[in-house]
Length: 278
Length: 303
Image 1 (cartoon, chains in turn brown, green):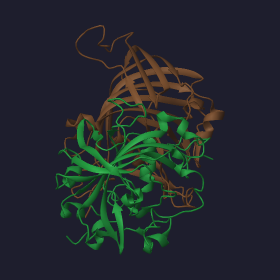
Image 2: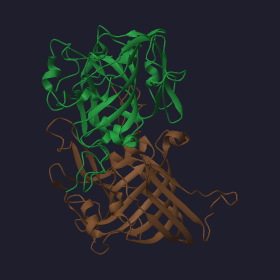
Image 3: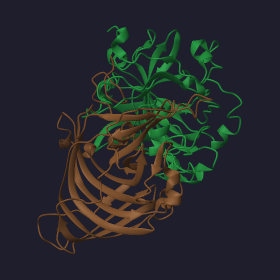
Image 4: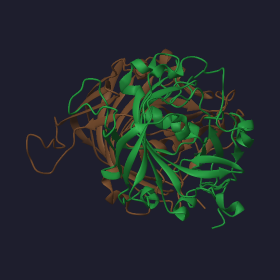
């Protein structure tokens, strides 16, 4: 009997891309709040998801530098289980609940790519970097202080896709206006059989369930953000018309479950969900 | 309406990891035939496949240097659509049809990863290299000639997983004979909902259907192959049992081997060399079988 939570399934289950949940994450984030053109960003939403008319075009560009572990000290295998990520989250509504829709997400690691597909994040591979902070004082250590500057960028296949800069202004107790919505994604797995290319085997709207979310060492400041145009991507059409606050913080959370909101292969949606209603 | 054959689905369908089929490939191959422990080979088989009693443990390690295109001149975007691949293919039986089973495969490109998962290839990311051959002669040119040597390697996450070297002996008259079996794969996509994590959403045995397969410039010679032991992989469990191995070195004459006809002549690989396509041939491009949701429901491999 083959074992493993994902492919490749193998005799011992040690070859699978991802060990089974519970999954635990910890890392640092550089984030920029921005507004894109709602007349354009409305077209990135799947059926059943609408723009949030109270916050049209409000979005977050989020760079994460994080570490993963499951039940076997995976965090001691940094080559395989550390990951860098870039995510766009767009304010939206689903059946009256305020949600954050994830249209695009990039990672630099295959285990993270597979976890993303399973969780409904449409991940691709990118090269992602952000300024880090170190304890030993130096011109290179980038301390978390007033006027501290942090940059981040994402590229893929030799093309620059995102550039961001945050200048820290003040420490904060909470990340007001950021990550205060449940994230909704789309689990999608196509068929390759002739005639079935547009009839996916899996097409589900899902709510990402995070356990024990913790956000700490929060700094808020000013920001810059740019999505250069690139072949083979549609990120630039979600680019900023206006940029808001910048954030730098550390986070951790766990994943043991996901909630299926709707099965788009049958157009059936669940009548009850864990989403908070307005 | 969002478009795209895979995620991310987007307004114009340009952001998807891979464009929709037809998909066309051309490339160079360094391959090593080897024999592994039959029990180790059998242990990798999914339900629905059984060991080939005539060649259990017979396997092929392939290193490919590939270029892809679909309908939009993708081959002119080398950063996104060239990739390298390393795969193991094991002899097996699907009912009474001799097939190859792919337990492990690695690529260095996300578009190839997504196509692989869609096909049923259990692709992971790796760093893959092979000696290339150049037309201008010189000590670094590695000509395709008797006595020439070609190295290849696979590593991932900082570990070396496989290394091979082939020494060319002579051209092969019929290169197709080296790939005489269809490849059977497992399309697998798990659920994450609590209570369903061992009940995958997709769990299908599928056959990879290759149209217009062309092999050109095939050479045969001596092979060496090594699978170092690594953490987080089980490739080394398939390590070869012989020191001296047969080698396959394939080179296409040109990418034009795939010209046209992608809709015209769907066929399994080399079914012209197999007088009877067997049940797989009749299944065509549909999944060959629906594997049970849980591998142990029908007793695994009876081992």
